[in-house]
Length: 406
Image (cartoon, rainbow, N blue to C red; front, side):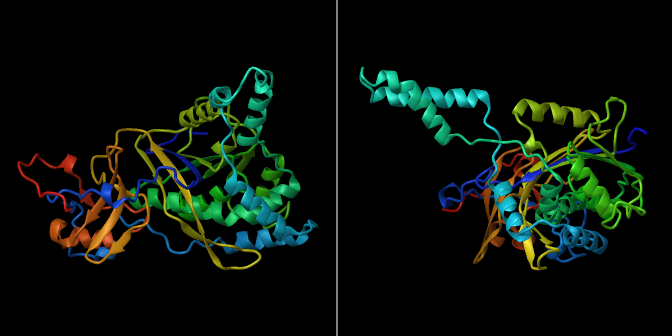
């Protein structure tokens, strides 16, 4: 297995959580992009394309599962003898959506101390002996009880029906960003940690099928690996796989010399039992990744996928992603990312931005203060897009700037 050539990426995805990384929408905290800010036209797109197609647009149209994958999944569901499949799918979907990270020991200790102090305030000498029991009871009642998910053959099928489309849509959106920003990047090898049903392999094949020669799927569940292999073979255990060069393993490659152009962990890190485990795994995956380093993180926009069963109504998939690349951060096009739905109002637009320096900003953009081009670009942008704007930190110091609007 050869080392990666050219840029190499480590990609992690997770389910979007309400309230995480979201700036307040209070108008009192809204800030104006200074009047000197302007559209970044280094790529010379103004006048050559409409504002709706500015280079920061990263939206995807409706993502559809490959028909051969749909057929294989439907065949496996028809052949299964599991009762009440739709109810089980809904139950698992709700469980995964409400699932939290396991509580760390130091957090548990901190809660216990807080509860102990709370009870001591109202305790007299007769109640002191009951204090320990009350604290333990309160901890059990208020602490999330995390349990490891063990995927059997049946649960793997339910997971496939519940998450195959959403996982494929989320990973497709992440790969689309890499392809849009670096169209010359042609990876040859890919590793998927926590591969599950193999949706990463299918999405990677749809994006870079002409260049990828090797896919390494790693999952601790033998039932999941078997299911992913059946999906590649049209729903059966025999036959030729639709995507060639796919290998399945229950453990990560031991050799530190083995590297891959793209390393992915999609919805898997949250299934590890502790922060220390997650840190160790990320460091291990990073060692498996090749050359360039850049960092990008955002609560990303919901992207529609299509349910293959029991109906084909479009649905939204909300997720967040981090893409790490070895090397030095590119200086060009370090544009802020839109981290919430754009609020369009008469003659102004509210954009919540994650700026290149890591700070969050609630920007109110108007045509009068910021120019028609920036205003139009902001108005047609969506959650997850990048706003092509020169931020104040990238401009030479100015002795005078327009005062903020009241």
